Length: 387
Image 1 (tube, one colour):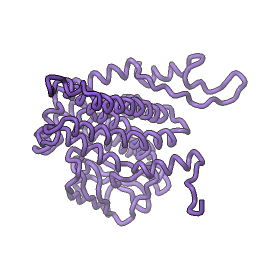
Image 2 (cartoon, one colour):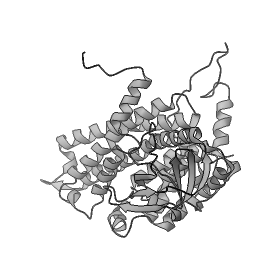
Image 3 (cartoon, helix red, strand yellow):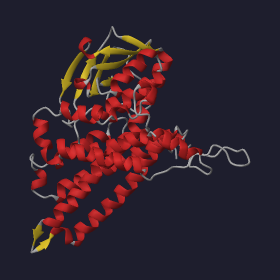
Image 4 (cartoon, helix red, strand yellow):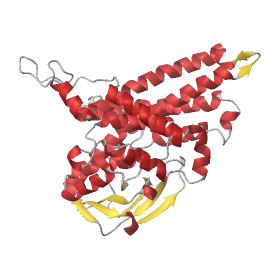
């Protein structure tokens, strides 16, 4: 039984978490499930073991200097383990799982700031292709699920779910475009799949070296996947799922930073005592632990809402991004500061976690934009200038 089938069977049980109707025939809203299932726990263990073996955080500074992405690691993660196809239905060659399982993968990749195009290809581009719903898109989805190709939606990394694509054919700040085999390009008449070899991809120097950015120009050519209206829906679906699952990546960043800081302050001694025993530091780490717990709840809620297709998914995503982006940055800042001198060096990976957290803070919509969306969805307009 696949993860999707197991979850469907659970929903169909009397009193299951998503029973559609009450005995009186009225609809009942989706009830969030924030706990990790056995399948998700096993998936976490497998991804964590792979990342620890192939991309341990201690080796991250050296890998970034050597160019970042390891093709062998991506093959093992995407193809051999099958995580690239978690969101792809089984009939199209995928695993038929859900956003909950993809969120677990991203949480583990965030814990190691793993330089692979999982968020951009296996989530954002995959969701956009699923929304396109054409035969060509289905063929491409099969290649993505099998790990044979990498696709990237040609929009800026900063683009939120409400993003309106530019119409001039040139897009700056496209994440992981340098690793893409196929670019999904939005034009005035629809969504196109363009071979990366037929487009201009100019690398830029990003803050976060583990997620490269590029300027993409693809003014002509390619295969049309959807008309203009469907293209807008596809872009929104891809960016909404990306923003929601980015919260799990941010959660992973925060978890590692907290755990590494606790470990270091337990081992580092001053005045013949572990520095972690000093009351001021214990209070800072306890406060950070509370924030990480809250971030876990927000990230899991967003992933669960997306998996269930809940109408409240945009609200859950806005809440997760508004909160988790801040927690990741705070955790990374504390990690650098509480490591003292070693935390300021290039050899220690703490600075790369801070750079990923800061880059993620503006990725797929800033916290401010998500707060504005949250206010709109909750019908809480901002005060006017006259009040």
